Length: 202
Image 1: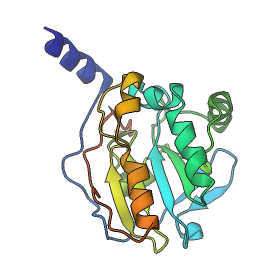
Image 2 (image 1 turned 60 degrees about the vertical axis):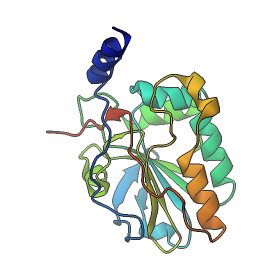
Image 3 (image 1 turned 60 degrees about the horizontal axis):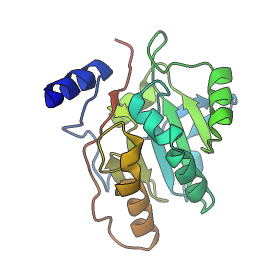
Image 4 (image 1 turned 135 degrees about the vertical axis):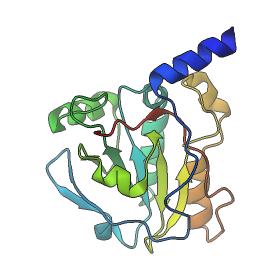
């Protein structure tokens, strides 16, 4: 009964796990152009020479709430941006869909959560999300200074909305950054993302 109830809840949340990937680690990450919540244009090309993390976000998703309400996502953002990593949150929720926000709403949310991404890009058309085949919130991508993808997939190995699981989680994003920045191959370059489906326009 418990497993059935969990399955129903996950279905209701739109939980999906990525199966096939449009991009592969080692390939060039697609450039993009999008407006952030402060009215500035953000492109991948402008950050050439730096590590970049892309985080697909939707504040209404319980899997995203797990990371933010626990403070884990904010901690990761602060830790890695302090080391020179560019961290871009991307919101691909279409108008009328869960997670769609105005620039004002997003800035207020980031302030309330004490979040610290380099920028939050509003992508209501889903153009950036589809270029990366982002499936879930969160869905994570790590790009090296040469513009190549070194990791894509889940934030960690605990596919649950329960924040209690974070303390025992293996964080794939941190592991990928640590390895790549040390000149080592990323041990786990691809994982299945988990969370709520990205709320693209039809």
